[in-house]
Amino acid sequence: MPGLAYQLGILLASPTNTIEFALSHRFGYQRAIAGFEVVTILTLALLLLIGSEAHSKSFVRKEQPAGGENVA
Image (cartoon, rainbow, N blue to C red; front, side, top):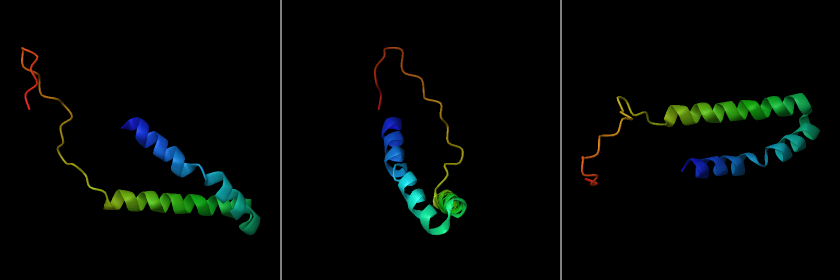
């Protein structure tokens, strides 16, 4: 799953240079970069606000039985 998440992130980020280059011709380099960053930060903030949080979630696995059997 981490590899899939990494590759999807690369896929979504790949048009960044093209978008910034197109915006720099219309608004100038500094405003294009600043505008792109503002949109990115606001999008991440929105995702954090609407996301759920698992309070008191334990990341410790229960020990396996001595016989090595998988118990569901």
